[in-house]
Image (cartoon, rainbow, N blue to C red):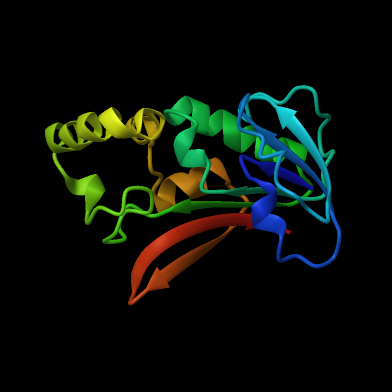
Length: 172
């Protein structure tokens, strides 16, 4: 299994020991967390994983990462690597339509004028610079964009009260 952008914490409730390769940017491996799984940590850019051969994993898993890799071209590169590397995949991203934004906890964050978002990010930067920079670079995806990036996927829409909370593109 290949986990793009995850940590061992995500897998702690999976009882059956798995062989998992976890890819993160340098300095963010999560290797210090204990696990009963066989873990391999790789520091790399998930948009370019040429060190792995095509279809070299049974499953590629990514939970709320694709919105953090950059603009449309980087998101497309991430999706290509997911499809290339796994015989199956599961890629989740939050929906901008959910009233409480998943990263900031702010109501209707993606509908604030750009100037208002910049104001908050500037204030957050004083106390949490790395997080604020990550938020400034976050690019949420729509349902349609997920279908474009994963053209042969099944798409699961997690909803609460009829409002989309997240989108998960998956193949089996």
